Amino acid sequence: MDFYEVIKKRRSARSFSDKIPPLEVVEKIIGTARLAPTWANMQGVEYIIIREPGMVNQIWQAIGQGNKFSSAPIFIVGIISERGSGKNAKSGLQYFMVDFGICFDHLILAATAEGLATCWIGFFDEKKIKEILEIPNKFRVIGITPLGYAKKEYEPTPRKNLEKIMHYERYKGNK
Ligand SMILES: Cc1cc2nc3c(=O)[nH]c(=O)nc-3n(C[C@H](O)[C@H](O)[C@H](O)COP(=O)(O)O)c2cc1C
Image (cartoon, rainbow, N blue to C red; front, side, top):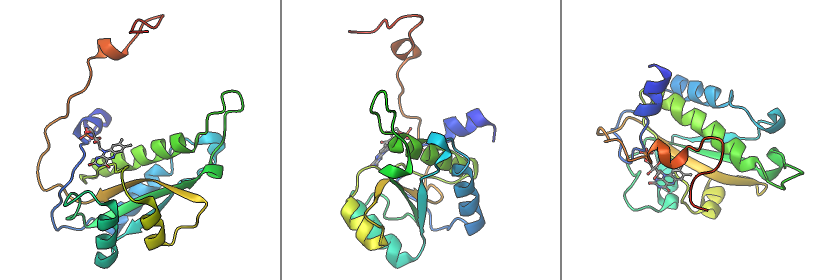
């Protein structure tokens, strides 16, 4: 699949078929996320792959979004510690969220290129997820995605027009 096709094809999927993605493909996807740029190449993002049905069930419940994701055969839980990335000394901005976002987006796009479906999940009970997966305290759980084969085709979701978000030379929007 061409790069732009992958970008267009990616959609957030919330129900999945029974088919389980092969482990080699899961490893290929994580291997691709690893190629993402990070602050000073610190590569602080780590991934926990949940495949055992009992564990998958616990994660789905800790996400707590009703029946959404209950059919997911696999979950990938992404973690990073605040010290796993840097801080811009001039602006004070912490970059761990940025590093995480780039890595997780690489992961999700690689999964799309492999014909797999994902959904970035940001709303979940972090404390419960950390307990279930025995994640050390220094880490934050920033994102989770189900990984599987989508049960249906999803229509494209709306996006803003370019004129609304593009400014030439100076900011031309509402101030
Ligand atoms: C940081 C982040 C957190 C998200 N959290 C959730 C979530 O908790 N539950 C959910 O169903 N979708 C979640 N989404 C998916 C968005 O709702 C979705 O990307 C958006 O509606 C656009 O749809 P699309 O991804 O199909 O293009 C999240 C997406 C992002 C980027």
